[in-house]
Amino acid sequence: MAKDPICGMYVEEGKHALQTTRYGTTYYFCSETCLAQFQAPEKSLARLKRLVALGAVLTIPIAALTYLPIIPDSRINNIVMFILSLPVQFFVGFRFYRGSYDALRSRIGNMDLLIGLGTSAAWIYSTIATFVPGFFPSSGTYFETSAIIITLIQTGNLLEYITKGRASAAVHRLLSLQPAMANVIRNGSEISIPVEQVGVGDILMVRPGEKIPVDGRVIEGSSAIDESMITGESLPRDRRTGDEVIGARLKSEKRRCKGWPTKFQRTSSHQSC
Image 1: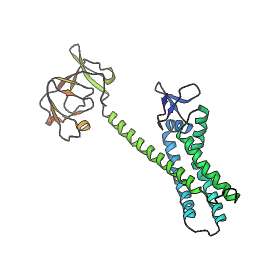
Image 2: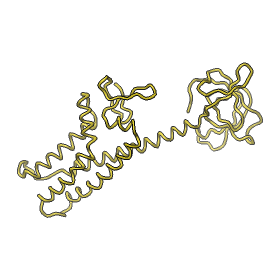
Image 3: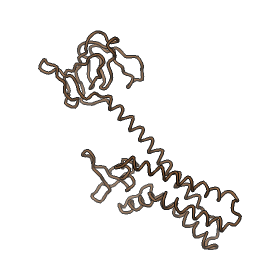
Image 4: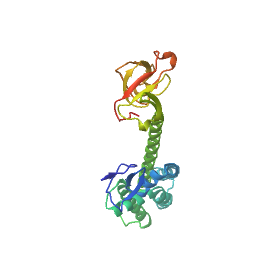
């Protein structure tokens, strides 16, 4: 079972499942909506904003007509709500129908299927009660129920999308703190190589003002290191021979450094950032 990276639903892996490959990794999706959001996040976000705005504009008058005596004639009142609910049900809520189709085709259940069934039942019941009076014992309608559910869920999807985007941006900013190159001492000479080529046991040289490229342990020298990214402390902390250092942290400026460049040895292949 694979996990949809967008909505978190579990998906059966197989050749008929919705999938895409990125950087050598295959991702599986429960619906076309999640796949489109993964492939084109900016476009999906703009569309979701428009759907939420349209849903809110139409749902507010539907709720007002339901709970306030604006139109005295109940039949005309229901017809107006029916007209207003059409775009909410089948345009704003189209993603739930498409997700339901994808779920049924893949023989799995997902949240779109539940929402589609629930809102459709309320809307169909209300439509029959509006145009075929007396068909049901009760003459009440539930147009506002389906409209509010669809709009609120889409609003929740929008907030979740924005939150994930900000979290992803924060992670990318942290990753950007890692230097691209590292000064490594090999065969008695100092050479500059890409960080990805630094191996466990390599001896690295870090000068005042430079970033620490990888995790390791100080074997020579001492300095004050800015660890605010890890600890939140604003003041640099002293690091001497034998102390551990974490990659992507910044050595302090020269005036705050205790004298000499620092040598340290990489102790782990794990990169903290």
